[in-house]
Image (spheres, rainbow, N blue to C red):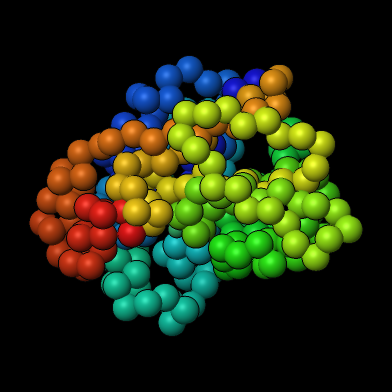
Amino acid sequence: MHILILSDIHANLAALEAVLAHAGQYDVLWLLGDIVGYGPDPNACIECLAAREHVAIAGNHDWAVLGKVDLAEFNGDARQANLWTQEQLTPSSLAYLEALPEMRVRDGFTLAHGSPRAPIWEYLIYSNVAKASFAHLTTPICLVGHTHLPVIFRDVPGTPQCQAVHPPEDTPLILDDEHYIINPGSVGQPRDGDARAAYAVLDTETHTIIYRRVAYDIAETQQKMRAVGLPRRNIERLSVGW
Ligand code: ZN
């Protein structure tokens, strides 16, 4: 089974469409949260996804537009974008987001936006924090998003650390019998210095994962953001992948 894993789309339709075209055939589509927030196309992204069979969980931005988390937790630009998103969402988009669970286990994998310990909020950037998360897993592999940084954490039982692997592009990596926390990076707002949309494909037959990047029309998304008055910093960061 080929699992197409997308996270942090952030209402960037041009990036989402480029990823879906680039990914080609897959068996199942899993989304790791933050479908909306920051970007100019919240309804169009939800409609694009709702037209395909998929499994999804909620992210902090998805919950913020529903009032399930306090916007005081957001920085000014993220808050402004979230308030704009709230005004745009159609009743069917709101119903879609309302139905997203906080975390789920599917086919032997855990799906959590931030971490299995604190699914909506915890950022797994450093290995010592990731290490603490493994104790909260009931499956060997957990898929997360939230940091917008592609990374694989591999647990080494009996040691206080876990390994952080920065996966190369287009190179299948074998997942052995150890436990893993895997972040595919962000479709709609990459933050690893590469402005291209990021995603990953997991192959359950060969036990491999491959990280992929695709260029998309950044200027188109930026133009839409400018037209509706979204924060300048969020527009500019798309050019540099930060
Ligand atoms: Zn995000």
